[in-house]
Image (cartoon, rainbow, N blue to C red; front, top):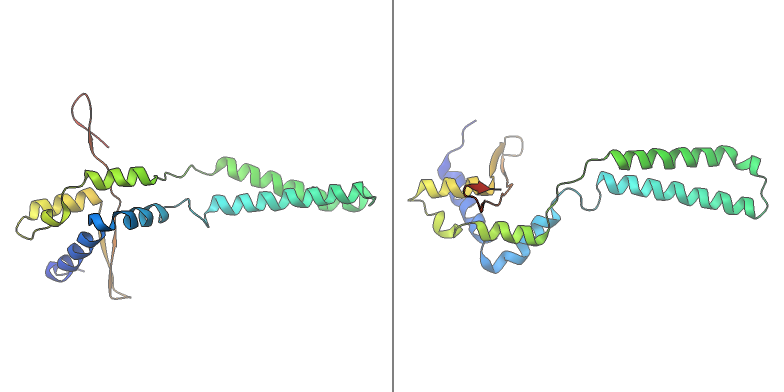
Length: 167
């Protein structure tokens, strides 16, 4: 499906100008850092909770044995807790490292952008394209929701000491 640019571009540019305005930098940085995978509720966090729960059960079982409970009565429960602990440890070892960035890197990304408000001047389509490229903008139309979903994956471009670009 094709969307008319004159319906999408002006509100998109207005939103970008507002979000990337110097007065909103701190809020924008906080939002970008908080929106990354690796924050609360991630798979790593879930596995870490399972590991801690298994270790806590093992401690309780050991304390019960030290308090006089027959160890034979806890063999099955301890074996299960040990298996859960080992599975969680192995899962943590095999989880990929998340590629998160910190606030300083986000500030650097924002600093590397041109003056967005001036670059999004409708008389200069090349500069608009450049801003969209630098921001890694992706615009998708969701026909079920009758909405446009815009995502950004900004990249910092720096000049390499030996010449050329590095990102």
